[in-house]
Length: 318
Length: 266
Image (cartoon, rainbow over all chains, first blue to last red; front, side, top):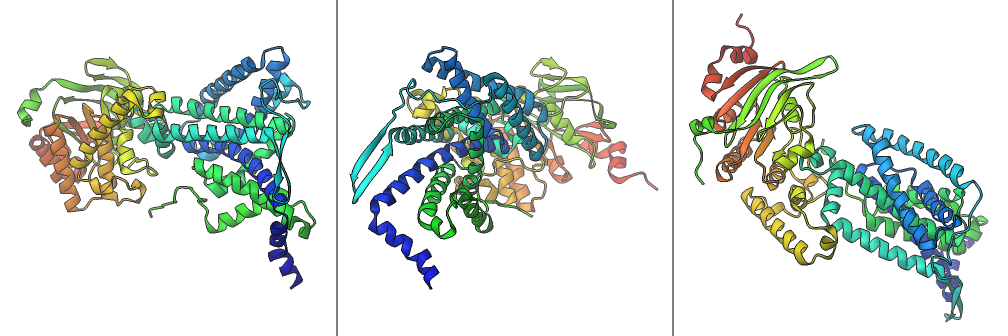
């Protein structure tokens, strides 16, 4: 009985008696969730348009952030460096389309997936060659991103919000809104969904696959750059950052691989669930559950709702 | 608009001509020296036993396959091969034997996708749904609604096409091709797998498209009754070669055609 009490009653009593801690945990979870959502968004964009699970999304985050810092280290003003990095991401998208996707047209998805592995290791090697392997500091101040924290008094204590986190949430929201409107309303958005469904049919109505691929890889690159700046500002820019990209997997399973709102909601659920789980239930298991809780949640979804919360319903005609 | 009779169509100018087209995949010869033409305003059938190269022929015409030799003349422009984009841009639309729809999208969006090449406003305007882009979107929607009415699929406009029964999916696919306002419409077995009533509906749509909009149609079909009723001229392929070309009556009596379909008399 005691263990049941610890699992089902005690954590909620704690939440009730110390609302400030609950609010702090929720906020931390929300911020983490927004960043997961951004990474997942990069995956969704490419998956929607080409059915490819882009393993390289994580390294693209690192590569974009390193490029930005690298330009700045060579004396380029921060905002010019930002612009140049966007150009680099466009060139990368163009290169991926020409050298990787185009020769592999009509190959099965697993082959394209393996190609993104190749891209990952190419970017790791190329990045280390150009920028070196040591961690770098994100140029937060030069980009006029705020630092420091705001403290709120209330809820029987203090809640402290990092300003950079607030900025991250705002920027991520704007980015998601723009992308969602773009894909829902524009001709290119419709063409993108068309390409995702059938290459053949898309070609027959005159949609250019090449153009669509460049656009989605570029969009994923810009999302990667944003993620890299935000994540880099919270810790540092290093190659180990690409590991967080794997956190996008449970997010995608939760939200559905093809849904932009799914990526957002999935990211938030994973982010907040992780922090709440760690803070209130973690001690029961000796702590450290943050690292695997997301995958357990994903496993549950795979069993009961494999298409995710927002994924397109899987219809197979036999 | 008045329907051109078959004799008029036979006199019409040539819209598309393929000359001496050969196509092979490795050692397999799909087409060998095939030549025929499609004239403006006619319904041209391509028939032949299974594996005769009919679908390959359509794929050559809309640029999915690039033949090893031969020439394709479309609207007076001579080229050695088509590209899908150039074909779509030049006014060639098609449907597929095994359906190629955007399954996750609604009927409405599928047909709107057919207008991809006709939308020109910059996407910043589209993003804002304002000004010229709004006007353009409204105009496209109007055209699409016309097609939906024409094909009698108003009831399913908001349904994901993946959920629709086969016969209706075929109709949506035709709608998407019509949305391109094509000059040449390629139909790959538009009636395969349909019941009698669905076939009759589809035949009616094909005749109406041809007569109301004056669209030139090339179709592949196995149902000989349908072929003989609908088409002005028929080209017959067998093992990748052309074995007959003419009006339905001429083709029906042709010895090679009878042999190809029924085999050698014992």
